Length: 534
Image 1 (tube, rainbow, N blue to C red):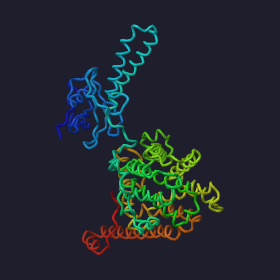
Image 2 (image 1 turned 120 degrees about the vertical axis):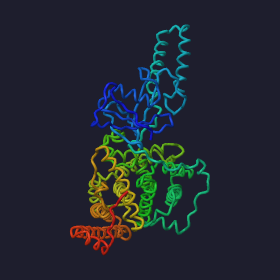
Image 3 (image 1 turned 180 degrees about the horizontal axis):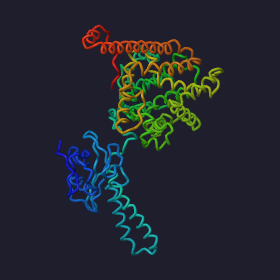
Image 4 (image 1 turned 120 degrees about the horizontal axis):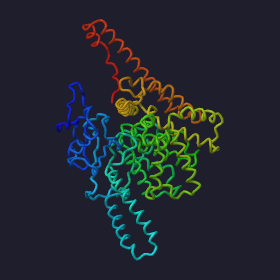
């Protein structure tokens, strides 16, 4: 690690008891590692600016030097003594602009890139030379003034265009590998009859498949349900849509493309096991399938509570109202809007409006804060449910997508339990950050308080079982494989919880009895279930 640069008043030395704030600064545009800087309480803002200029290897700061200090998520930080400490792994990013100095030409796609500034400058010069022979001097002057304003704005924004645009959350996420552009011309996957039949079951094991295979399995669902033929979908367009969606899912522990596939496959399994393929219209199956596919696209790995408490860009855009679900809808339809991915291209305007309305309704319903409202409404509808009623079927789709979204415990234990590990890993990462920045922490996300039984028993007992039984009042076939498996999962975690209690009590009693007894008791006791950890 490079030696720390010290910032302090020129005429004073900090007291021995004064603890400086250590910050790490990474100078953008260089290969230098983050430099440590010590900020003492008695230093001035000018001292700190001078130190940052030293780190950036520029001359003493004057009015021509513009410094911009940002956090890893792109948030601009004031250069002052209240800068919070950070780590070498998460340094502040320092960008330097010296007015009048040539900037290396690069085109980052911004309206105010150096190349664009050069073009505007050339245009301004041409207009200036043409001013003399033109009679309408006033109009030309106004045009020149407009160009000058654009140039000034470009200068001011140049520094803003030389860093990566921030994600909605503070977390930097690794993206999944991009697919080669020629994939649409490659031979499609051929699945065995056993795989095709297995795909229709709600007990399907998702852990056996790679990402591209899962995308191909979803493509098969569209073909098998007759949606490709009914809505005249181009197969290459469908492939591009699915692979673009796959790439738009972040590599989170839980909210990733595999979760997208699991939700979509559970919906497909319920369609087949509950004989809904013959009871729902193709356009309704299309709504449900696409809703599952896009329902968590571009999930940042931090839930709605974090978005609101951290005042992220998503929370601001959507006014704290289901920011993630609204974002998933927006990203999904932005992808569908692309001609190369528009599987809705052959729908009539009326069909498209119906499909869009249904998808938005289904995706927004996955916000668990709306759970009680949706449950109450469907329970009333279920008492006199009619497949001939369009609104009844729309509510059924909402319930099916909602159930599919949280259906992991409806699968066998060897399939379901790894998903709990993934979910807890994502929860713990969020709660760790919340503790770090002083945001509220939900108890069910706190690694110091959560155990697997504690995480699942209440959720299964008070959310999953009532939810699926509510849906089962209209689709009784769910009791055979789905609801029965959920109750098995509940019994499993209840038994695990009792063993954990017994092991904890035995350890406490042994500790109270003395070291020797504790050792003997520990040797005789069955291994206690381990506390869930990331």
